[in-house]
Length: 342
Image (tube, rainbow, N blue to C red; front, side, top):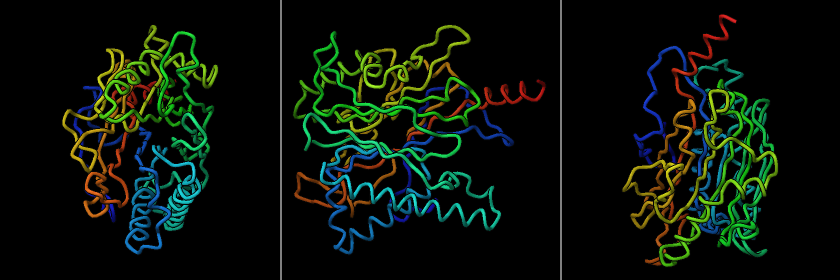
């Protein structure tokens, strides 16, 4: 891919499965998430500056080309929600235009992902922190006949009877139905945006990270009701785990308990300060539930990176991360074979 603004992707070769076998005739479905800490998104309000307007347009074009199923943003000021919505509108319009051009030219095999934008519709969810003016999480889901949102809610850990954890930035969860997967257990996804305290608040960071993992399932059900009762672990052949994906700015590489995993290798850099902050955590049972998860970094060019310690305020001090959830090819082939002989 030729990126106008984002640098060459940094690939993490670590996945959650060792079973991804090559196949020249069958490609598994991939659900793609792009997560980005916008660091208040104030740069989107300063687009009268020529460099920032150009950066915005180029990043929109890059993201339309990526054609994600969901965009996840952290650290969005309450006063910036309108410009973030306009930013996503621009991505949606570019994608819709590209999809129409492909249909008109009958080049359907050339750019299948951009056809996600054919319907040109998406849902925009956001939740504030602990007060009205606190930063927001934002999750945008591009919808079509096969993909739609079932529920959304804020995870309020401090309101649980068995938890005393109060999050500085309460996470936002959206439950997404994706009927393009062959494996039925993958067709409902719990996608959560998270932002943990910085390293300067080490005690709070540890307490909130531990509280999140310990009480996640209870907080999910409290937030979205029965829609949150997605299997977290494997309970027999007929009850495989559903995907629980937690993406965002952890401000460290998380060290979750054994029933959780983390994408992104040790030492992966996702910030202008040379640190790895942005990762995806997932339920480990997915490793045995026909799923493969990968993470790549889409780095911002140095010219667009903020560095607040040096007083450099540009676009953001975070790179973007791309997280993909896909089916194991061997399992997809098995499902297709079963359909063929049925």
